[in-house]
Image 1 (cartoon, rainbow, N blue to C red):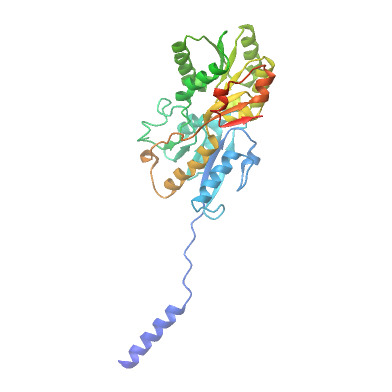
Image 2 (cartoon, rainbow, N blue to C red; image 1 turned 90 degrees about the horizontal axis):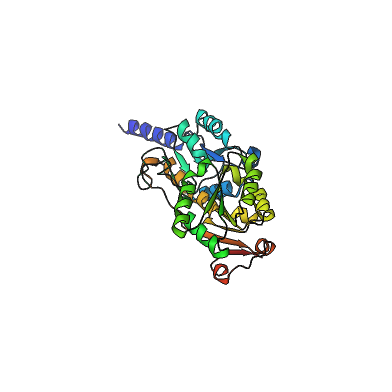
Length: 329
């Protein structure tokens, strides 16, 4: 018995001293990302030219994810052509990816392409009315994420524009078919104030010049621009046409002002992309999008471009300047 115990003990020591078999490493998660502006080559990898995508990557790093080890991205860009979203959605679904992070204009195509792959939206004007989720508290499907509250802030943007320029002629509104809810909200807000709107609906970027010509012909006194896949890529051009037509303009996102526009009021879109990382983290850990409440923006920014105001011969009231989050001088 003693000899047997010695043999068993020796075998146990030998087994304990053997190197443990390495556990098979899980392949990195594949995170699909859909953007609308930069060329695809500019938004690939761990460092891109897109502040929004970089914010998403930063958010994932803050949660302990290492690019290449824990995840990789499969980025697709419409490059300003919204008609490309359906084919880009089909590409990501066919790979397949574990989760998709996408901007608002891509959501209809993604919803059509898959009902199983989790989708995290970085901004939707009204995801309930647009049919992406059942309610904000209980999305109920494969889509969750963040809203832009664009519909809710239309009245505020009109109010701020009215503080800068008292409406005399009609307020021109530049919008496309993706902005129908915003256009309807603008009509309601303008009606309550007794202001007249001029609809400048366009289908693609080729119609933008004609829209501004129509505003000039109608003697519009100011301009409200709704951000969309059509206009965002043309931000500098839209701002230049507004300046040329001497139309004080209000935009929904800051990069229009950075491109030369007069004023913007809206959520911090880059921050939305950073916060989207927390949704990705929860989903990769097993949470279902149906159970993850949609979040609303926590920060809204008012930006004012004083050189643009000066070029239009406008004096910005001090009451607006003190409320601005940033003033470009």
